[in-house]
Amino acid sequence: MDKKLVGKVSHFFGKISVAVIDLVGELKSGDRISIEGANTGIVEQIVGSMQIEHQEVQRAGAGQSIGLKVDGRVREGDSVYKLAGV
Image (cartoon, rainbow, N blue to C red; front, side, top):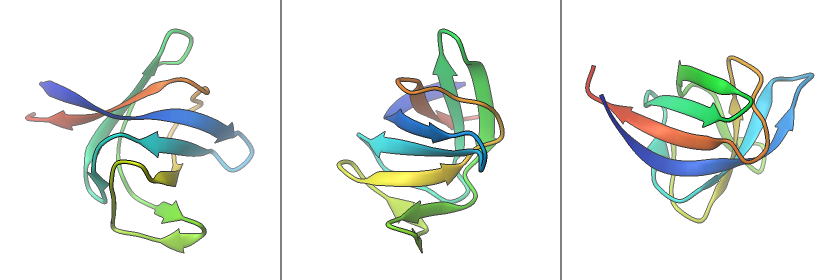
């Protein structure tokens, strides 16, 4: 399975399980991603709810920061990869 770095976690809101991700590549709803870090391990999921400034978006690109509902606990500094292939 190929993976491409698309961003880094800059903040995590534990109570609502939302990560703020600073993007360096494009991400869109339906993409399969992996969030990885030294203490986090690997959290894989499909991109579902994604927001910019509290507005639901279907895609976002490099230079933007998004809020993303995540399936597990992640940490600031974790890398976000887009997965290709199955």
